[in-house]
Length: 594
Image (cartoon, rainbow, N blue to C red; front, side, top):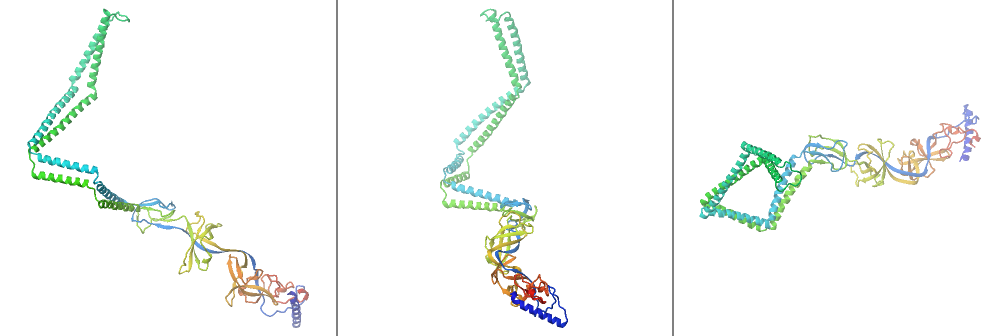
């Protein structure tokens, strides 16, 4: 191509020299220093541009979003019933477990209702037991015993006024009266013993008895010593002085026992326990006398009753009681029907339900955490009135998520479980592994976006609710794609079509030709070319916004007018192909174009 351009360049240079010489104007000397004149070719000068080659290589494309970090679960915890807050078990920053009690309301009213329901349950259970017990041997025996008691009372009423009944009552009165006389005698004996024990004469008598016993002992000891004087340690003779010694010793022993007995008698008389025993004996005798006296009074009343006949109305009333007891015995002997037991059981079940409901009302005064998390706000203090619309705490879960609105054009590139990366200004230089947790099956009718939820793979607490996070979701990766710099992509001003300017060489130099391209994935720096370009094509990446199709261009690092001839050779574009001369003439020397 350079050889084809040499004749034109030489001719243009000669023509320029002739024109300049005729006009008397001097031209700019060429790079070789030879004199010459330059002539501007027709048309606008080449536009300065920057270029790059279309390359082939790997590309990993993704979609970037920005969203807010939110807790997966958040609740303004309010009680299910209204009441005064009596106790708070948590505060801001407290970690809680699901079901853990965090607050308690006043429950005096609920406790009273529970106790009432429990009492009603006990009554129902007692009625059921009564119904179930009918027909049992022990219940029948008890009912029959009641009948016998009522019949005995009726018999007694009917016997009042009869001679044999009066005689029987009189005999019992006489017997019990005699017993009272015996009780009075026993009381008198006990009282006398107590009086003797406490009298000073008794004490003096015992002391005198002790003194007399001591004197007798002393005399017997003197007599023994006299009788036993001169007798050795051998066996005493059967008769004579030795036998008198033995008799004297026996008298001493007897006197010693008498002294000991007197000492014991005196000690007993002074012993507090003896006094207490005597006092108890008197008290017991008095109690026995009082009891038997009461019996006598009852006997006297019974005798009076026995002597007075009952009225027919009294006997009729007692007969009615006998009949009632007999009816109860008959009922006890007859088992209840199954329907009776079912009705009693139903009452028990209803009472149990009331107890359960009352217990639920008590439990409702205990506010519990609905899930594992941390208290982020305390909204009430102890003593405040909490209602079902006035929360006590705000609790957020430890697990976080990022919700992203994704356009319908991009939703097809995403799927559940797809990996993602999270980053935030709060954690500079850190990238957190994440994944797509859920994708909304329907778009928002207003924004036409789908809600995509991204969660960290590891919930380690680094991300906090309220942070702003950048999310990058990898959508595709190709190892051998045709790569176009993103800066080369522009729009045709005439048609509005998207494409690129490709540098092509021609007879008049390099020109910018607009080509429409089909683009694919982009990684923010390069974009995949699906069709329209080939590897090695030179595209314009700077200066293309003011270009028109087929406009001449030159590298931006070359000079302006005459820059193409600065070295005496035509300059090549970034693609390595020769580029047409810039405004300003070519070299006047043919050798300069060789």
